[in-house]
Length: 127
Image (cartoon, rainbow, N blue to C red; front, side, top):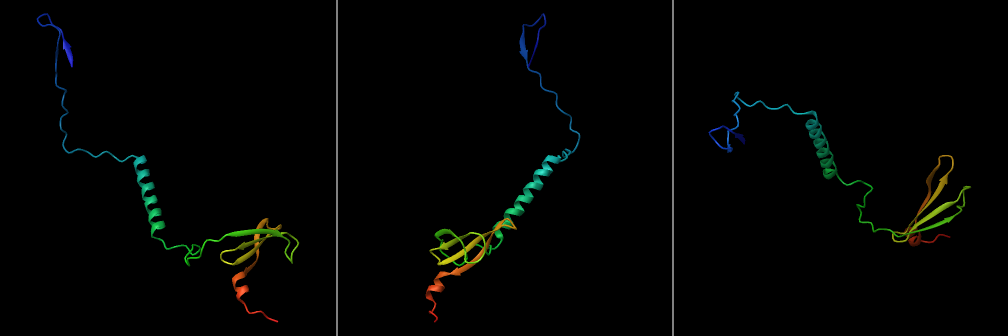
């Protein structure tokens, strides 16, 4: 809106239409920016990752046999063999026990032994 003041008129606003752009033919598409291309690539990668996770079969370490969740009791002690202490881990629900020991040369915990306590209790005694 512009105001024109001339001696014959008082200051009254006049509305001038905005200049129109002349048509140049068909509209040209704007080139896609590198940021938009990067977002499309990231979305495609995420879609592939999501579909891989959703459509893949269960992992073998998952609870596929409807095994009940265990309740664990940990006891520290010295195993009959070896020169290091061990941790005895007893699963009281599933009746299993593992023994874990520290390997000083490797600097890591290793499994030393495993027993199925339920099968031991159900076994026929030997003489």
